[in-house]
Length: 268
Length: 271
Image (cartoon, rainbow over all chains, first blue to last red; front, top):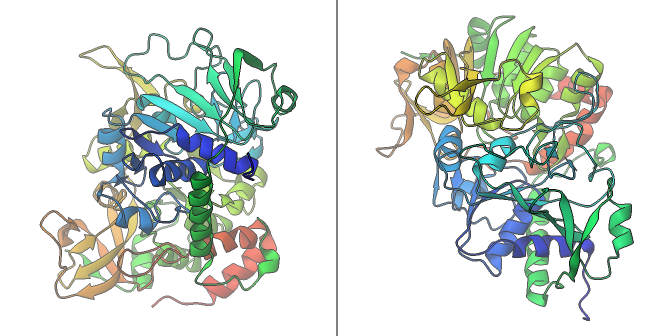
């Protein structure tokens, strides 16, 4: 218990552990990409990673900043066109897990990456759907990883970009050729899974040193906890070492070669 | 046969105000040099189509070239927002911008259908999404054989396609390597096409199944070394990820953006 780690590291390690050898994972950029590559570099060396830019079975040495960095193509088994990726490999049924991040998530695991506010008069315009709407329905299941906050975990998303289980939890019922949808949501506080009947997200496991009150305070609806609420296992020494090395390599890779002349203007 | 032109001449001759223009390249091979030439020539009222608008459309929108944007993911990859796109959508600056948004799967299918000469693309998509509520170009049809409900979107058939590629041979045949994205489909879907290349060579050095666009399928070719920077060209130069991060600061305010545009686009002529 002497290992020190941050809540972000706890989230990445826990998300990585959701992936196993034999899975074919369609990877979203950002947190999912970090978790997926951590899995590949630790307990799941044979996990197959696919990015929407067309890179099949890729093994990047540093995390890509974009979905189509050269690193992904050069370390891939092969690279196909974007229509082929979406039509043959995803829609064709070859993806077992879609691993997604989001800006907003609601109690039925619907994801919003389109906008905050009203569609015609947005308060904040977000990037949009990208690959997610079809990843979420064509992959056999969906993992989601996102930081836990009241701004992110809302009762109802402002816009359903990507369906979880719909506004009523029933959007997948009787739809042919559709995946099982979200099976796990991993945050920096806990692990949530949909209730088998209602599909509402329920906290199944709290990360070490996180209380129910912490989760309640960071969730925008009346969140439920499983009766057999577990404690998430802590990260191991090797997982932390590999994660930190990966992040350090990535940071140094994306900082060069040109230094911004006007660092003053650079707000992140 | 493709005609070899200067980039200036190619843009001047083949892109008109009001045209529907697709400048593609999925993260890789983004035609920045061509985008900057379009800005310099002050083309207006363009309908811009691109799966990932990226920095190139952020720059063109901020420069006032666009009246409409059709896209599926409008962010600065791994960094955050496209601030010029947001300013246009949220505040109408420098002009009002109409947007129509899709998912990647739908746009990829629409390009493919455009290349195939079909009026529409069919996909298993948009299930449970609110996107069909805000985009009247997304419909649902019933499969005549199985009865399955499927999404349909119109094919993309632009006036002009603009792409960047590694190289052309002296007859105007073009090789695209690496993340080939949607490059072949958009050229075949368009009425006219401009291809910028890193270099013109005697022999493409293409393997038998390589992605090669024959000269007779292309309208104009312009040599533009580093024409995809700050995106990248596999085998020539890497993606300038530091600039993608820096762009966030440049594009955030109108003043820093305009200063950047003046120094880096308007005061730099094309070859």
